[in-house]
Length: 120
Image (cartoon, rainbow, N blue to C red; front, top):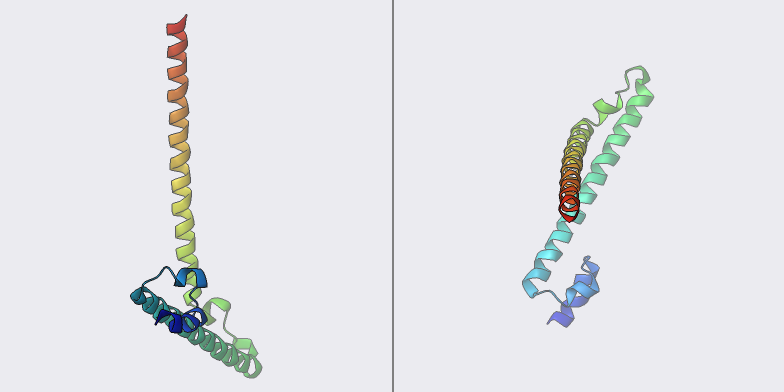
């Protein structure tokens, strides 16, 4: 049964090496997920193409009132905000890690100094 499913699974995006380690249920879930992802990509491309054509017609007929980039693609502002928020969270994690490292280095120095005093 799995041998018959193998070509279809690989065609749907499951790697050939992963296929043989997956159960039938896992294969079916992955095939369905890959199918949905592909449908969403096609839908997004169609929406982009449609918006692009509308803007081209708008630019031809009324170039003075052509919408700004942010007005034409308002969802990008939200994505940009999410990305900047993720970056700031990553920066906070990086700063916390650097503070922890500094504290650890101070503790190591203190331990070494104490060991040197006891060894003298």
